[in-house]
Amino acid sequence: MAEKIEFKTEVNKLLDIVINSLYSEKYIFLRELISNASDALDKLKYWRLINPDLAKPDAAYKITITPDKDHKTLTISDNGIGMNRDDLINHIGTIAKSGTAEFLQNTKENTSVVDLIGKFGVGFYSAFMVAQKVEIITKRVDCDKAYKWVSNGVDGFEISDAERDTNGTDIKLFLKDDATDYTDTIYLRNIIHTYSEHIDYPIVLNLGEAGEETVNTASALWTRNKADITEKQYKDFYQHVTKNFDEPWMTLHFKAEGSIEYTGLLFIPSKAPYDLFQPDRLTGIKLYVNKVFISDKVEGLMPMYLRFVKGVIDSADLPLNISREMLQQSALIAKIRQGTVSRIFKELKKRAENEEDYAKFWNAFGIAFKEGIYEDFSNREEVAGLSRFYSTKSDGKLTSLDAYIERMDKEQKAIYYITGDDAKTLACNPLLEAFREKNIEVLLLTDPIDEFWTQTLLSYKGHDLKHISQADMKLDIERTTPKADEKGLKDLCDKMGEWFKEEVGKVDVTEKLTKSPASLTVEDGQMSIHLERLMRNHQQKTNFDSTRILLINPYHPLIIKLAELMGNQDKAEEVKDAAQLILEQAKIAEGEAVSNPSLFNEKLSEFILKAI
Image (tube, rainbow, N blue to C red; front, side, top):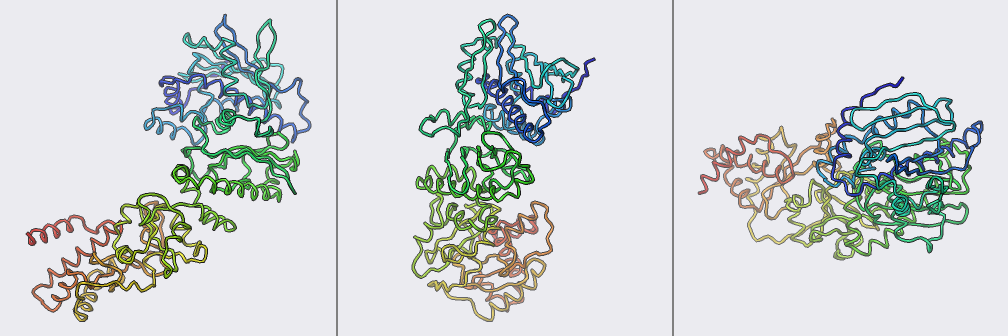
């Protein structure tokens, strides 16, 4: 008796997108199903290693493609691990845990579904682009029962008992009338050669009475000599391991020899994945031992700030039956990680020589990469050297810390920076005025992680890193305007401190402003205004609210005038209103919201009216 199960609402929406979108590369479905079959064979090989009681395979591992022109069907079979009833529901009847919402959102913003398929656990569903019905018959290696799964991709699926002598899975596609080309053996050979040549198992084309034909070379690409591998083969393998459809930005194929031997074939994509910043995201490295897949969840194999790196590490020095728990603590894994990271850094340094090319990498992955300055103590300075930033002298282009140091005057000892939400707003911050006047370059740091790594990387190549609000150097700016009267200035600071005690802890005079009447900052060592704003935006409560300091410019005509009026009681309200506007202006320049927008607009309008 078949059991009918409805698709979840989001799965229905997803299937509608996949099936009905204008999708020119429909043949991609075959690559996806072959890739799934390969994964099933990988899992079975590993299961047999850790479960020696499992029966030995009846036949060699392989993937079989059976076209049937008369019945308009195409069947993809494997003798891999297989599935039980729960697997069918969890792996086929639903979408990967975190993927559906992101997929649906991305399809609203990106009409190219081909860029999205495969990233969201929906590879199997690409079958419905060419099939009006899909039937699965499967038997898991540790289960006596076989099961049948049937769906038309519209109104759910049915599961029932089935007959299958051996473990593995058969996926039969009942092809649509416009998809019968997929029963043509010449066409199928071409697709397999193009997209699945690198699969490490024989892909066999069942020709019926004419017998069977192995289509691919069935050898692990990473074990072959680099000189024998074409760029196209590297690209096809990249698309296989990443489920992406773009080209890799970087390909790194190497063999390490010495105290531990291992081979790596790694890629950096040209685009950031949708889940780059999801907390539960794992790194993208598959670990093999002598071409046997062990795990893609070895946390210590690649640091989290390089989680965008994809590919394969294969070592002959790890025991085949090593458990995942042992892997996390293995000293060999730590050595592999150290050597691999070093090779990635070396390759990045080469690519960084081409600024335009390196900017593509940085724009995609820079935010994640900079986490390494904060997290990886042993490689902190190296990660910082490979990082890129905007600055007041970079003319909208990215610059490095080394390039910054080269441009410094001999008298300058520190590297100065300011943090905020975006470079254009930061470039207008009043605190930069004196630095521009003295021709001192300032880094404009706009990513949330910048607030954290600048607290741990206190110096770079002998130069202290300092926020401009904490710069203790004498700027010695030549002034062309007089300074406010000392007594009036002191009275103004005292009064403003009294008027605005709910918003600022202190009002003080500064020599760091040239054009603006005032600016906001915090006490040394306290959380920056930008970081506090980030914490609020992420609904993070903190008991460490920074003390705001309002710095006023004693050379600004407006401050001079207000200082003069401090002794005039008739002008007291006007002075207070003007001072309030100065405070609100300082907030806006710092990216903060004004305390009372309605009152701010009213008072500003009054002053403009008086002025004209």
